[in-house]
Image 1: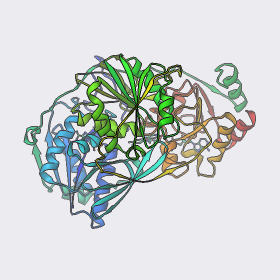
Image 2: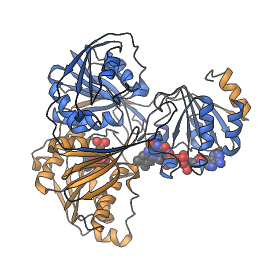
Image 3: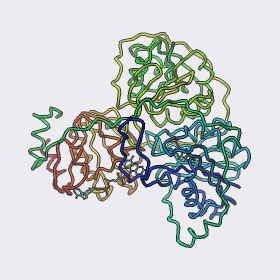
Image 4: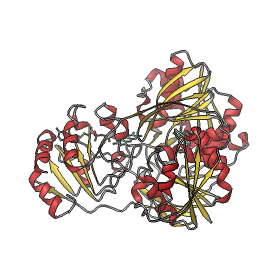
Length: 253
Length: 308
Ligand SMILES: Cc1cc2nc3c(=O)[nH]c(=O)nc-3n(C[C@H](O)[C@H](O)[C@H](O)COP(=O)(O)OP(=O)(O)OC[C@H]3O[C@@H](n4cnc5c(N)ncnc54)[C@H](O)[C@@H]3O)c2cc1C
Ligand SMILES: Nc1ncnc2c1ncn2[C@@H]1O[C@H](COP(=O)(O)O)[C@@H](O)[C@H]1O
């Protein structure tokens, strides 16, 4: 079985985000970019399935700027077999909306016919948490979202999902879309020899039009602002002082 | 103009998140119709009918809707969508699961996790773990939205809408529920509690987490955790507060042994009063705390318990 893993290039999760003075967005020029952390978990899961003999080929795909190639090479170095870059925008600050991403991914799925799509539950830049569910809808497939456990048997996936009340286990037929949560696995680091090897792995460059899709925006950004700052607090010297202040000053006890 | 609002419930009681989502829906304009879909949700529908501002409750009883499975629920919502300009749900794991599916089926974008309503088509939502607030205007014919509960108050229960039973649509048969692993607890729910106390990696073990539990019992508080505490097995997954966990905004949030990574702050920095207890005076959590105490938690928590 072939697995498709969409990976997004996003601002590194350790970088402090700066809102631009003209309120048009967040400053992404010259900041460190990395693979979306959830997507690393998705790639790792695909590799583990391949190591377990349940998967034969791992195709990674990224939709965005030319530089997303770096993210794809990183996935190849982790252990994916081949990559597709869909060049959809020229400016890194032009985020491609989940609906557009899902439509492009549908084109790729139609062509590649994977038995499984594994993706992140959420991109840590736009925090949409939508693309996997959207792709699943467009394909008319089942969705196993927020997965922290996965068991594949012939023709079906048993997925443990992280939900508000605890965990939910569902069984869905393959092909399906899975979106992964943080606790599914711990992604490996790419070793130096594998980074070298990844340079020779195939990476195709495509355009949205190749999949009959176009990049549209349904949401216009009116402005992007800093969140309201909290006013400075005080340090207290003891538990007694803390309780006293919470009772009298803050009035919350 | 009308809003279709998906109720969240466990077939017995209506989730607080729904009452908050009603408040957001009221700001979008038009009638509010609540959809209660479940295996046996008559009681919940009756409760939803009391929500202030709700003009009608649609009640769809069918086993297919018993476990919040996205595929049958999305098909039901899409079958009703024609009459509505807005389709909204709470930004809970259930709402986040189903609403993007609904949006894609209707060829619309989803507007996830809104924290404010500016007008019928313009909304505010946090991005980059709440480090930026985006105001977005939708050009879609229908606005498909999930609502961040922590940003809206609960609607009053002074209404009396009519409840209309509606039929189920064909089950696409794409998913099968196997089991729920739910931790039963007598504590208030994390996202609706007035006081939340959360433990981090500093707790050191699941056994030590009892120190947090004891203070929570004294305060009638809900218990939360950082991702590190959950990953280490000190606390169950549904305790996680943060960018990718739950978002809370209680009157009082107490962070114990939590460093204050942006991903954690994303889930609690809108709390009214924040207390941080940490042995490292440099811990970033102190930058958002109203009251900071530099102390060893193994000393401070028992003291706190007895001082309350
Ligand atoms: C994609 C992504 C999503 C994430 N989502 C979330 C999320 O939703 N929620 C979340 O919380 N995190 C999230 N994280 C993780 C986040 O980046 C941090 O790693 C995490 O919050 C750290 O948890 P912590 O503060 O408990 O642990 P640490 O950072 O290890 O901090 C432990 C703290 O405990 C203090 N301490 C230790 N012993 C004691 C003692 N005896 N007494 C007092 N203080 C003590 C230390 O001084 C330290 O400050 C996410 C990360 C990524 C990459
Ligand atoms: N531009 C993109 N290229 C590749 N994958 C993407 C892209 N955008 C989103 N995804 C995938 O969809 C997941 C959820 O993203 P989102 O819906 O934007 O929160 C991510 O974790 C990725 O797996």
